[in-house]
Length: 234
Image 1 (cartoon, one colour):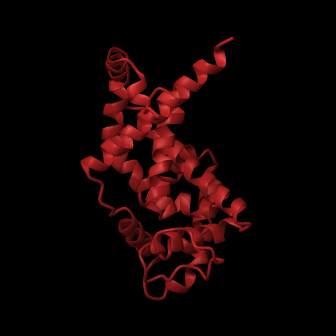
Image 2 (image 1 turned 90 degrees about the vertical axis):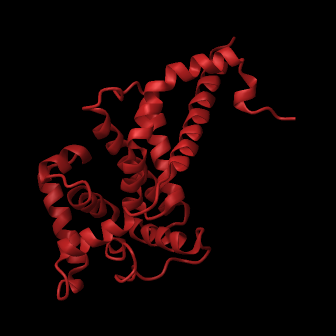
């Protein structure tokens, strides 16, 4: 019989581990729902979004980032989630030999059908479906639209979060507008972006969802620690 990570540890070790992780657990409960909605705005696929958020907490905790500082933690976590979503889009593009725009469309089909399809992605998203306008954007354009209209950041704050110049933010917003300019006759682009982001951010996140994700984070961090210890043994 294969034992779980938890049953391999002495109860006292489990209690000590929980006490050590309590600040992280509280931070996770406080920010998980907002970060999941951010990831879902970027990816449109809930399982991948959940993975991106858990991985963001794990990677920043592993790197010793100042997550316990309430003034710093949200920005660090949001930045890590955005990077994680970008990595998933690029990884999907490499895996299926697509360009990033086609990978975004594949994610759209995945969210609609309950799994990644075997067929090539079709045309850009239907603007009448939730997030349809956003599916027409390249991922870096989508990042700035999400920062500007979902996180309500200024151009300067968006540039700081994404690690780019203000000029790059302005250019990407302009190109995003050009990508969906056909919709401008009936709706302003800003209103359309806000409506689509509101739809994508409207996912339900229950307390049970948070606790399940928190348990996944605990298992992931425990596995990393045990792997690190095993490498240090003679």
